[in-house]
Length: 158
Image (cartoon, rainbow, N blue to C red; front, side):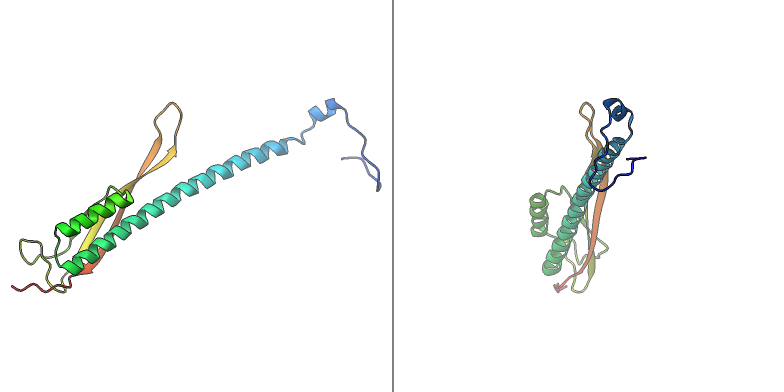
């Protein structure tokens, strides 16, 4: 306490309730509460951002698996599409894919040995910032895209 020099073993004098009400020593608690709320909101935001990275990792995984399937089969066919659809539903992505930067061997979408192609998978993630009680939530739509390049491992006879 200010102005009081205490010797060892002595207690400070008791203060009256009026002096306690005028004291500003309790404002430290309000600052602590506000800082704690700010830290909690920050941590919740970081946790929500973690979901975006997980979703991007899933998009990248699907692109790698589809590219590998096209490399092994040497063509874009129904089995590649069914693999994509099963991964898409299993991971809950609601994504789309397309094969770009390639030259097909014929009309049946066959890719010749050592010809390269790129699998492009696109999805989106709705990042919810606020969810007010009587209003629609504030959402940011984050587009996710993964491009994986592959090379056909199948030789097609002309």
